[in-house]
Image (cartoon, rainbow, N blue to C red; front, side, top):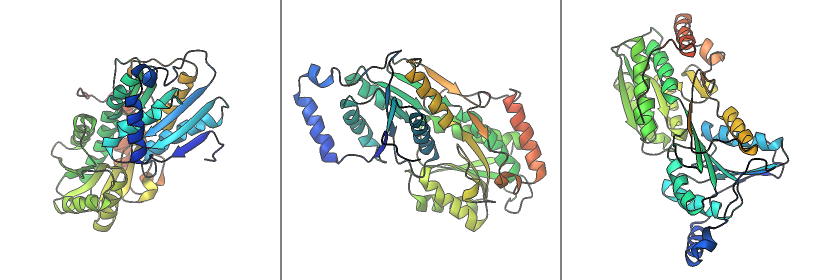
Length: 359
């Protein structure tokens, strides 16, 4: 998108700058350091300044790309909205310090992010800056008057992608074998992954065949494509013929190995068919850009429900599946597509029975 001067993307500050700010805040009287450091958005005000806080890097992460694009699109059509996109990098230990530095400027009405671990960081920062507001998608956190969250129903998405994986692994497609084993590669473990995403993937697969087993592996970071490739090779050798992943840029290693060794993959959150046609044969999507634009419209009008945690899913139109792409229609047999499309129709109508575990 063309930069019109209102929307900026910036890199993390040098560590020495963060340290200097920390010393500065420490030496100031408490009321000077923390009072009035950020503006509180009130109903009826006519402008909005937004910090899009990317916990990682935007490039290579569809979730973050859509987050930034949604905010920038919203600002591009309004003279009274400004957006700055800040990439915090992959070192999670630095995220809170960086966010503190940014909020201390008092420049932003709203911090917008998308990460399950971000609400706790925002809550800590918010204790120092009680007027600052935060909205986080893909997360759940209730009770803070400074924070509002929106959780995509990832249990539902993993359920239908698991069902599709189950149909594929029990089929006679060229790379399907007799082992009835599917695989999941994750960058790191966290509650939403361990309690919703991975379990639902297996539950969905077993709706296709109760004998299916799951091989789950963890990379340890979001960028090591070589390790992801090694894990995928080992999993294929053990009988895995269909993969899913939540691994950021590291997932490229899994895709490359699936292409080389002969296996299939389904993807969460975004349309990735074109990345590996014939290998990636199913893509779920979250409507991150749509949700972000709606969130910012509410914030601009002073309608945000602070302290709430909302879950949005298939029946709300924020979680879905890309069924019209040639990557789906050209590479999956008609019989599999008919069964899967019927399953998705049942999910949208509320006819699929499942229980979402508590986080």
